[in-house]
Length: 130
Image 1 (cartoon, rainbow, N blue to C red):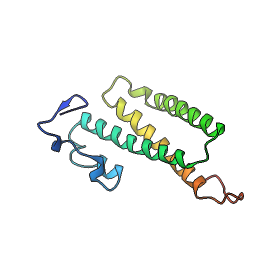
Image 2 (cartoon, rainbow, N blue to C red):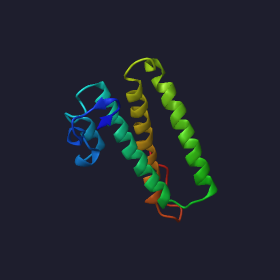
Image 3 (cartoon, one colour):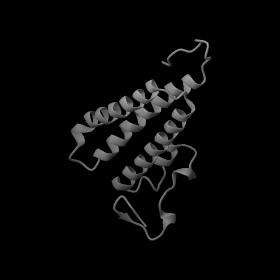
Image 4 (cartoon, rainbow, N blue to C red):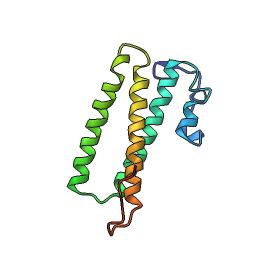
């Protein structure tokens, strides 16, 4: 099996995010701490976890044109903001990690915002989270 240019004797050597309580615990595991390439892989998997969680929340929200515009603008913002944030590292091996860490952080914030919306009263008793 190959992951991010690393070959493994068997699939058991590759850490799996579902084997951990949180994505943060996964990233701190021994398997993810082996070297920069594995750390990049694990950061990418953690980011993917949050993207899937965000997508599941989007599906629970009222589907309308404003939500679609918001989703599109959000994706554009995240990509541009994370490229800006990681620019000083773009020639280094840590660049993918910086991009994924940024994406993960912004996605976690978005999840918090949308979860708050899902949990608010539809009669106007909702406020934007801090």
